[in-house]
Image (cartoon, rainbow, N blue to C red):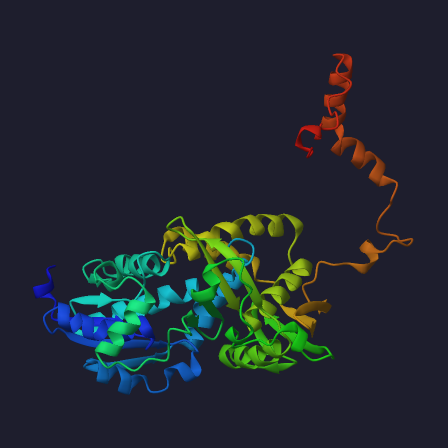
Length: 421
């Protein structure tokens, strides 16, 4: 589809620097096409203030705002949390989970409005362009996708700021406050600016959802999270909707310095990127869920599920949410969650999550089996025969080596060549 053929575009609009600039750019470069802005309310809170006036002033025909907070938590965050999916040991996938939902609504809105194309403000270096466009391809491959960062002459956020000033677009970013941020009810990410040097410690005033552990209260906070089939459903015994639970827990955990992560991750496109994440409630929920699983899942299911978690995280990070493999893994995970119900008590203290207790009506933990004292259910003499059978392959291999004259198969490694002069 040529530029002349594009008459109406639906833009994923956050009101930030990139999407604010894109509205006039689309109209100037796609022959005054109609631009409809779509904003997904995922819990950005004050960031949504004044968006309509800003979008219209930039040249958009209208702004559509969809409250997707409950859907985001229920259909994206909870399945990912149940899977135990964490990308490269630290990243809880807060942005990665949100992009396919936004893209899905982008497609639905384009179809409802009779648009020819959809547009996004993702750069040509990042992961989000892949997440948006793979979702569009999966849901409606006939829609044209416009990615201005791959077309225009703007090459940096500084260039974008100058373009905005030239076109009289109001911005919250400045040359001094140059962080690229993405916020939702689950997390807040920070990239760019001083963070581009991995040696730089994050600035104290950069954080917005969490206090520093040093400034956290000197007294811990005890909380209790209730789960039903793997989903968090209550806080301190009070049943809550997903949105209310996360909103309340974000404040509690953030006040105690919980949920900060500073990591260098491997982007889908191959380069390394540094990001700093604030995920107060999400970090607590993930940990509590792991703790509850430790008493509700049998050994073999838990160990296999841990291996599935790595693949699940990779699929989500790479924008393959609507791939059949993720849906198949989701079906497996749901089976594992049938008995993951109960409560976890946690102590939050200066950035630490300390386990204070766990219980479940489906717990596989038996105190009489686990006791080191005398019991009637476990004969400790039985262990001797088990060890002999379990270790038989090792014993046979060792005897073979001795009979072959190789008694020192496992010599201590020589590290002397690595020593400094």
